[in-house]
Length: 119
Image 1 (cartoon, helix red, strand yellow):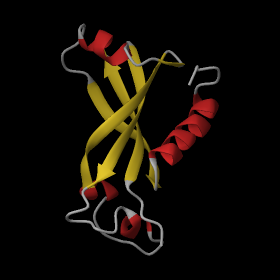
Image 2 (cartoon, helix red, strand yellow):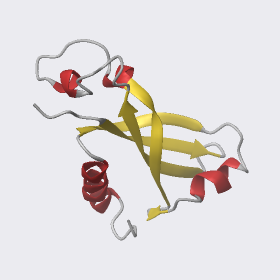
Image 3 (cartoon, helix red, strand yellow):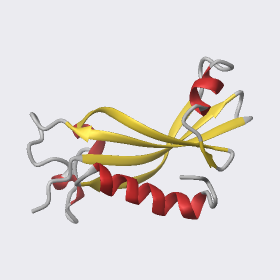
Image 4 (tube, helix red, strand yellow):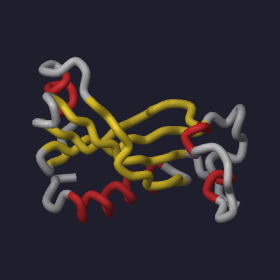
């Protein structure tokens, strides 16, 4: 059985009353001390329990897209203009075994959502 160690979700972050929007692919890792099987049990077809994020150890990396372009600096620049952005999960992309698999999933999803993004 595969051990899914990373979770990926797409978040929408709105700055300046939704005038500026960043879509950020956020990567989380699993807290293996409490969830030794990783995220695997959460993605079983018949699972009916806590949300997969219950197993998160922490947010480890993000891949932001601003105005349709991959831009690592966008959030820090916009945060300087708006101290309290509004953030919500736009889409849960699932759990993955490796960070390489996470990046492949981001690339595939971003090519559809943000063509010519530079990712």
